[in-house]
Image (cartoon, rainbow, N blue to C red; front, side):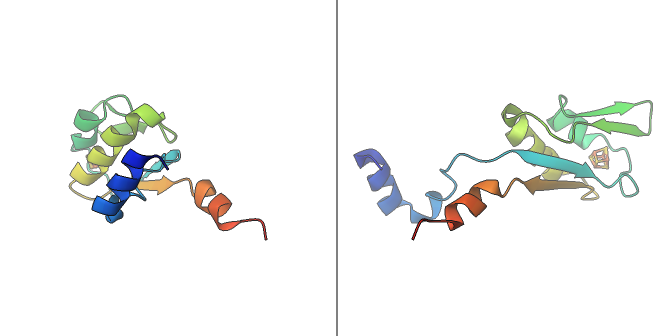
Length: 99
Ligand code: SF4
């Protein structure tokens, strides 16, 4: 950790965890719950698309560049149909330290 990061950690201890590079995300949409409101298509048009008036297409493994858009889309869904799973591989690796 360099000096700037140390200062940041002392000033904002709650932010140090989120400063770690985020892992890949996986998207699942509960299509039984989805009402085709298209809010997700507005917030993340590269990940969610409506075909016709009801058929939602989505990318289940979006690129890291889409991460913020996907999080906003999930938060905006009026029926909470979008589930985002974080890849926990990094956490697993951090848990295994050499003895
Ligand atoms: S915002 Fe929610 S309800 Fe609307 S299309 Fe997207 S997943 Fe479906």
